[in-house]
Length: 174
Image 1 (cartoon, rainbow, N blue to C red):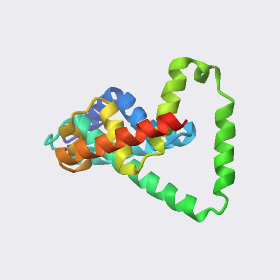
Image 2: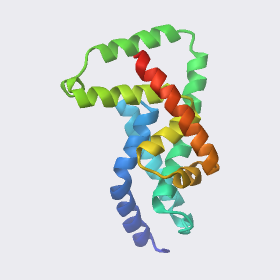
Image 3: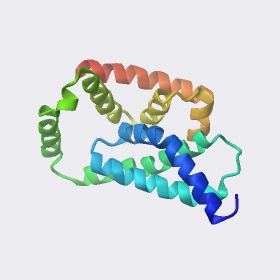
């Protein structure tokens, strides 16, 4: 894989194959559709830049998910800093609640409500819990999650269990 046209072909194949995975991961970290689209573009750009360095030492799915998680971890860290700097957090929470009170027709559907509730609850988890639960929901094995996050499979199990417990509490509270 050393010519630009080869890179373009591989990039197009990867983005086509893993777009749904990437969008699900992004939804687990960001609620606003416009920002989700920006994050998708940023992830795609990072995949394009990293493509020449891909050595097939890991699965493509793991490679793509790792890039996504690096971008999203940076996004979350920046968001946390900006929220801490904002003195009017309560007003932001009230605006978010107002946005969620008036559902679209799609959100009114039972399945959509459950998915939205789950996504909202996942976004309230700690970053390390968001990461493992999002990847697990995408069907990744403990080993694949460990490879993406550069942690041990045992730590994946611990974080996943803690994330499930926290998620259940959040889902019951909603």
